[in-house]
Structures are given as C-alpha cells and as structure tokens.
Image (cartoon, rainbow over all chains, first blue to last red; front, side, top):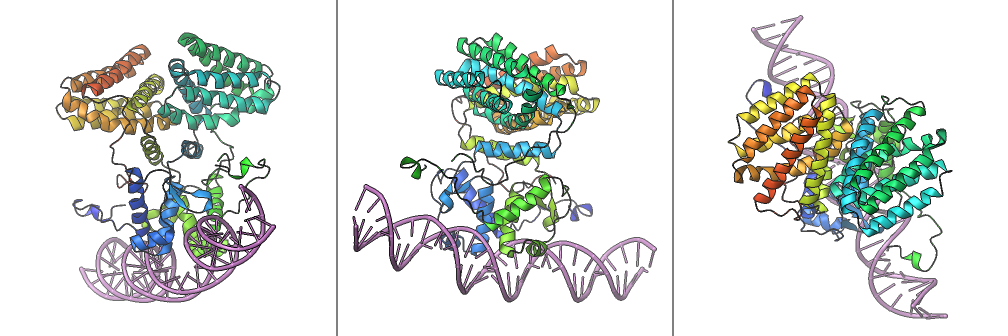
Amino acid sequence: MGHAADTATERFERISAAPAYQLVAEAIEREIVSGRIRPGERIGTEADLVKQFGVNRSTVREGIRCLEQSGLLRRESGRRLVASLPRQTKLATRMSRALVLHQVTFRELYEAIDMLERNAIELAVIHRTDDDLDAIADNVARTGQAVDDPSRVAELDTEFHTLIARATGNRVLQLAREPASLLIYPATQPIFEAVPEAAPRLFEAHSRLLDALRTRDAEAARTWMRRHVADFGKGFVRTGRSLDAPVEGIQFDSIFQTRGSP
Amino acid sequence: MGHAADTATERFERISAAPAYQLVAEAIEREIVSGRIRPGERIGTEADLVKQFGVNRSTVREGIRCLEQSGLLRRESGRRLVASLPRQTKLATRMSRALVLHQVTFRELYEAIDMLERNAIELAVIHRTDDDLDAIADNVARTGQAVDDPSRVAELDTEFHTLIARATGNRVLQLAREPASLLIYPATQPIFEAVPEAAPRLFEAHSRLLDALRTRDAEAARTWMRRHVADFGKGFVRTGRSLDAPVEGIQFDSIFQTRGSP
DNA sequence: GACGATCAGTTTGTCGGACAATATGCCAAT
DNA sequence: ATTGGCATATTGTCCGACAAACTGATCGTC
C-alpha cells in the first residue's frame, strides 16, 4: 500500500475516484440513513434511477446489489425496490459466520455465552413484562413435554434464551448476544443425545429461571443461569469435544435472504 | 403479508428460482466458507468466472458485488479479486448503524455498555498478557497528559476500552461489545467539555483499572469499572440529554471501505 | 547488476442496446 | 366478488464495445 508515501511525506489524501456504482449506492444510502426515505417507502425503478443519476443501468444495478446486500434495500415480492432496515437476524448470521471463519474456539464462545446470558437474565428480571412471562412459561411447558426428544429440546433451549433476551427490552444486548447464541445452538443437540440427565436438568433450570423472573428474584436468577450455563460446559466436554477446538461445522444461511419466515 | 394465506391454507412452499447472479455468489461463497478457497487466495478474473459459470459478465459482476459487500471478497489494490475474511470492524459498523436506524435509546445503550464492560474487565483480569498491560499502560500515560483536551480524552477512552476488550483474548466478546462501543464514543466528548471533573475522574478510574489488571485483582477491577461506567451515565444526563432519546447523530462510514487505516 | 523508463497486454468500470420472463393494472365476463 | 384476458412495465440476462488503470516484461542507462 501507499507507494508514494516512501519518498515524500504523505501530504495529500489519496485521490479517490470512487466508481460510479459506489456513488449511486452511497447516494441512496444517505437518503435512507438520514431518514429522508422511510423504511418501506418505494425507491424508483431501475429506469428511474438511470434517469436520475445519469448512468447506465448496469451501473445502477451494481449499486443496488450492494445496498440489498447491506440490508438497506429490499425487493418487495420480487419486484419493486423498497427501503428497509437491516434485519438483526441477518446481521447476527453474518457475524457468527465471521466468527467461525476466524476460527474462534469453543472456550471463547463458552466464556462469552456465560457472560452474556448472565447479563440478559439480570436485565430480564428488571424489565420483563407479563407478556414476556407468558411466552417464556409457554416455552418451558413445551420443553417439559419434549425432554425425550433431543433435537426438540435443543430447539426449545435456543428459543428460551432468545425469549429471555427479548425480555430485557434491550436491543443492544439482544444484538450483542445473538451471534454467540447462533453458534452455540448446533453444539447443544449432541449433548442431549449423549447425556441422559442433560434434558431434565435443563428443564429444571429453565423452570427455576421462569420462577425467578416471575418473582423478580435477581439472586436466584443469577444462580440458576450460572448453573445452567455451567451444565452446558460440562455436557460439552462430556461428549468428547475439546474446548480449544475451533467452532465449526454449521451449515450457514447464504448471504441472501433466509428462506424462512416472511 | 401473506395474501393467499387468508382464503386457503398455506400448503406449498414458495417456489423460488434464484437469479443467476445469486447462484454465482452462492457458489463462490461456498468455496470460501468451506475453506476450499483460503483467505488471501486469488479468485480468477471476471473473464475467468464468465467462462467457468457460463453466464454473462454483467451477471458475474452483480454476484461479485454481493460478495464484496458481505466481506467475503476483496479487491487487492483496486484490482484482483481475493478471498477474504469479513473484517470485524466493518461488521460492527454495520451493526451500530442498524441500531441507530432502529432508534435504540441511550438507556438501552448505557445498560448494555454497563454489562459488557464489566464482562470485559472480568475476563481481562484473567487473560491479560504482559503485552496487553504495556499497551494499556501506554494509553493511560497518554491520557494523563491529555486531560485538558476533551476530544483527545474521548478518543483515548475509546482506545482504552478497546484494549481492555483485546486483553480478554475473547473474540466473541470483542465482537459483541464493539457495536455498542462505536455508538457510545460520540456521546462522550460533550461530557468532557461540559463537566470539568469528568476527565480527571476518568483518568483515575483508568489508572485504577490498570493497577487491578496488573495485580489481577478482580474485585477492584469490577468496582472501578462499575464506577467508571456510572460516571459516564451521570455525565451524560449532566449535559442535559435524555436517556430515553434515541441514539443518533453519528456520521457513519458508508457501506464501502472506510477510508481509514490500510 | 541494479535501477528506472517504456510499452504491449490484461482487467476493470462503464456504456448502449436488446430480449424473454414475469409482474402489474385495467377491463370484460361470469 | 372472483376469474380470465390483455397491454404495459420492470427485471434478469445477454451481447458487444471502449477508455482508463493496472500488470508484467523489455529495454536503456548508470
């Protein structure tokens, strides 16, 4: 990098002839980020943009692709372009994939989960609403009926912790813990298959946590969450996996829209 | 949503013929994510991809744009395409922008920071190396000389907390706190301008935290971090801003490469 | 032999035009 | 009110082309 910097002092900024497709994307980006275009509002057609920016359609399209990818633009039912807010789940997916590619270890993941889940339960005790309580109670009830089905338990466990996170009412924390949550999920199922007492212990922990949330008992919540996460750690090594191995082996959603819920 | 769902039960999955540019992007994505293409390795030229995929160059280009945007592909010195790992800072920038667009409040941000920084210092006490200590000591020394320069203090404060995060040796936690950190930074400077005792208090807190890290004193670390974050909260309301106002007013990097460090 | 200048080939960014497939909007018919 | 038909609009893809910027090799000078 910086060829000229060796011989002369770096006096001038790198002259940046940004490609036109970037300029297009940045222009639209500014309109959305600044709020002049509201989420859900329609952007013109490609032909409109061609006229407005005075560039070729190919150029416009490349710009649009960038914005779609970054979540600021969406195609409504395959056609019209609409402004949009980046979906948190999409961002979280990206992040967890980045973590895998950077080969973070299970130990890092476990440590982080330990912290983040304690954070979450602590805030949830304070901020949870009755609706949150209902949703969590429902989840716990379903878990009670599924203790014999490992994959179902793993699924409900993830849902439980997501509901806890929602009950914090804190979207910053929700987003912070989401990537780790996505990564830990596939690691849980083998535990329920290999360790018979894992599912019942999970069910008890979840039940106690629900009680703690109901009575807003911070102390109990902390204790049980700690125990619950520790159980996971023990179960993990019990399945013969090393904490220092890199996290891996998850089939990721592609960078394009998850074919999931609408 | 779901127009057809009202009259008839939703029996069939949406039939999806993915456009060719997405298929191109997904194909390359798989190669990179699976590790068959290593980060830094060169992808062929656009012409090569045209030959391999049997599609038009425009189509290839759109696919490439998507991958560039998601950080899996990079242009080396403006030209060649190389595989790449998504950079954490870029992801963090995206996330914080998303948080702003979702209009999270300062209260949420503050609560989350409070949690995350305590997490970080707790782990840093355990995992910090001597190198970490040196870097942090250097930062604190510079802070001591800059207590009269509000913008410099704000900058050094951010750096301090980033160094703490690095000292945890935990990349999951680093990534988790980064978006919040990016958001809080612009909010700090006005405090040092408006509250004279803020900078000296910050300097003391940082010094104490450094000591705690050096002696691996978890108790002191927790206490001082708590106090330090609380100071921020008090300073924030002292500058007349409401905790329930949405976080805003940051000029974001665009979705394209930050014109910063190489 | 090391160094810089020169030059041809490669690659990217942009353009213009074109066409098929699909979605939309409007109107008639049941 | 729902269905069917039809003209139109819009997107996805293709083709061919060109200037600017970069790459790599050659050549000349010291």
